[in-house]
Length: 572
Image (cartoon, rainbow, N blue to C red; front, side):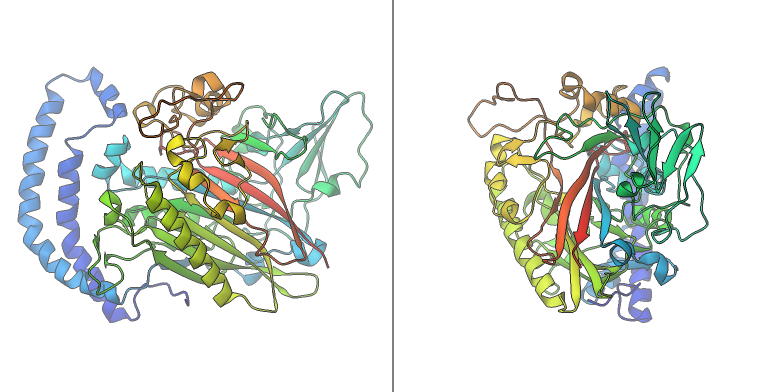
């Protein structure tokens, strides 16, 4: 599907749609406030403890009466707006597209063309950006404020330089986490999206040598590094002029992987910042339109290509007798690379509260650049949000079957013979984990034979270093998890995270025995980033460079964002 900024084919349809929404919005907002004024988050309850006991009941009573009256007064106007808005959904394309004005050189990756290898970063996060009243059912409020804060947090994390610190010592050869580097960063005036062509110069700050984005810290009993050593760690995705206040962070922490350097394992970390230089970002539950626009404005300097307001409204497919969709899919895609093609599909088998949202799959094809033979290099990126209610494993398996077919059809229709495919990634909120007995059906789905999960040891078994990504909603604002640093420390401690990560779900009629003997307590990991090697070019080899569990959005969402960095080598 050709990408257009407006989801409507002409300005007339877009104008009528906007007029209809203007008529609906006041009534919608008053209804939202009517429900929200009666519900409080645990944070608000704590803050009210110092107020006079009669103030809050008065606010609830008078607020409810006021918003109810305003809702009833604006309802006839909203009905008129609805009659304008609903029929236009037949002609609406399933997403809005925002493109930041940048040069083509800044949007392409030169790693394959210069060196025959490149590193790509991906991140996924469920933000629960529902209308304020509905978000409060998840113990989250103030959707618009959270959207702005989340956008600023993500922009701060992904825009900083990707610096790694290596300790040269007979007793330590570990890599220090780039998320908390204490080394001053270099500035540059080069392109913001990808400063990939010219590596940064060597610098010497307080006796610390920096080469090409890697920092070498010599110890007293070691020799000076040779010039060839740092070049191994050259990062083609170095982004020099987008940086957060990393100098204010505390001392660096080592990567926490218990199996780092062991055969069959991958480096991983619990990071207080989003990974530097994320190339493609997938967000879920961005249902609120105004929140989506705030995220777009905040993230567009870092991601030049954004798809938002993804999904259809009213009856989907149009003119059918399916359930009326009041919300879009909630998916949000931000990419540094140009999006050449995009396609959306809506799940037709949802039930319960999920029937009100157009959850589905977004498949996208991005243009990365050229290889050493000047052939175009592309990548495929897919986002999904599966059925949520517990105990509906059969529905989720049917949706995974649809996802597998839709991705295959999309790639078959858009693959060109003169292109090289560098990656094929699938991510999102799957709403099932790999440790709950109740999710056994989904854990054994054939999708996991096609796509690799770097955190998965097998069906129903996680790798020992994995951390659950679903937080317990009643304790979102406890001191142990209300800041990125506190949440990081809690996740690192198996004893502490038991109180804040959702536990596995037992099978119906069976007691839960978890964890198994000599196995760590992990909790529910329902946010995934998977990759497939069968569908990429035969000249490409993929290695997992790092897996991240991100705590930067502590107190802003009930999920822990995840990150994945892949290193792709392309044989000439």
